Length: 357
Ligand SMILES: Nc1ncnc2c1ncn2[C@@H]1O[C@H](COP(=O)(O)OP(=O)(O)OP(=O)(O)O)[C@@H](O)[C@H]1O
Image 1 (cartoon, rainbow, N blue to C red):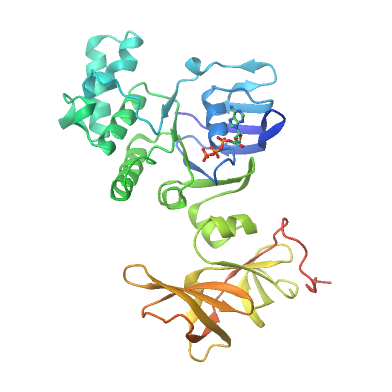
Image 2 (cartoon, protein in one colour):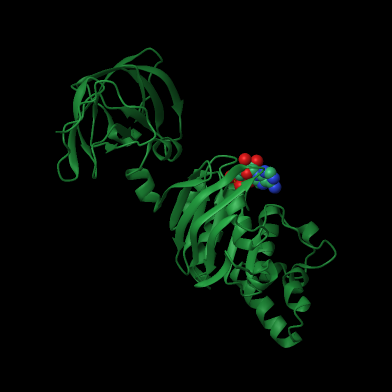
């Protein structure tokens, strides 16, 4: 397996940028998710890694070797990268074992070695008992595992997965997420996983690249994205909660700041730079009869074991969790515990925001 590198990678279609400058490193053996809304460039980046397309400018490396650059382009068949698509693309007339053996047969791998490697790939994907079945007699999740086994058997340097669970129902998706994570642990494969489903990305990946409009807005661990989003897009796109503009921001101290928002002074976590916004997660909103903030319930949804409350206060909408059902229109009091304050470079300047001296 091998790591991947991207330096100044750009790609446009008809003059419109699909990738507007990608710089990133993916370590050998890392499981990375590319997460973002439709049209943000995830599939384009995957296609460039696979070699189905060339970047307009920039360099892509695999295991330190240039795959695409100013004067070099390695075609897809010479990159040894495995790909698992949303549509499983299995041969209907071949058994599971036959499908998995196919890439080795094409390469002329001798029979004994072929048998050994197929048995290993079937074992890794939990398919040994189904080796003799045709794809028509498999569930969607089992077919997807055949596609994964077929990709693995060729011993690829990296595995690319393009929304592989999109066609599966919710229960099966959850089971397959566990299967992918277990598979990654056992193989140590470098995996790049495209999805627009944040639950999937946060549950499985070591790190997630959050993309928007052809750029990576933040490339971080799932906890990093949730606890310390770098800008308003990431704060709003990843996880539940609210993004609230500050009305005044004193100079932040080391890792902490007292900021003004929601008509209150609130103690927040922060890093360098004067913050402009707060990201308030539901678990940071305490329903507290003595709390300083007055709010009104606008919606209440049961989420199994708890209720998700939508609350209106000071012209902002907050999300809270509650053990009991609340009625729309009900008045509550809140306190806010240690939200994350960040500087959003994309946001318009906040009127009256007090800048540090
Ligand atoms: N072959 C193409 N010709 C013209 N435009 C393209 C082509 N491929 C992609 N694009 C455009 O490039 C942008 C990025 O597309 P891409 O498929 O990479 O997005 P995505 O994030 O994978 O979206 P989705 O989640 O909907 O698959 C989009 O605006 C898309 O319309």
